[in-house]
Length: 114
Image (cartoon, rainbow, N blue to C red; front, side):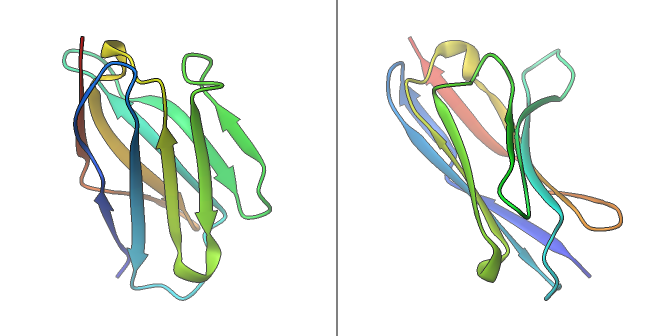
């Protein structure tokens, strides 16, 4: 059974940086798509960034130029480097893997203080 474990969330001041990680266990196959979504209080979950197995990336407009997604296929791990963080980046961040069906992490909280 595939399980995703996230790490790296926390509290940071505006302008700071955080790096999120999400590792999959229970599967030796490579996931077609890995990504990150986020959900702020009272809002719907929204796409942050995705990366395909070939390295193609896609970013939400609000994070483009500040966030970088990357993956390590050998470790079935996806990363999200978040720089120049803003208070509006405050949310619960969820990793997302696709391999014949979607898999979700448990969420990690990111809080950016002004």
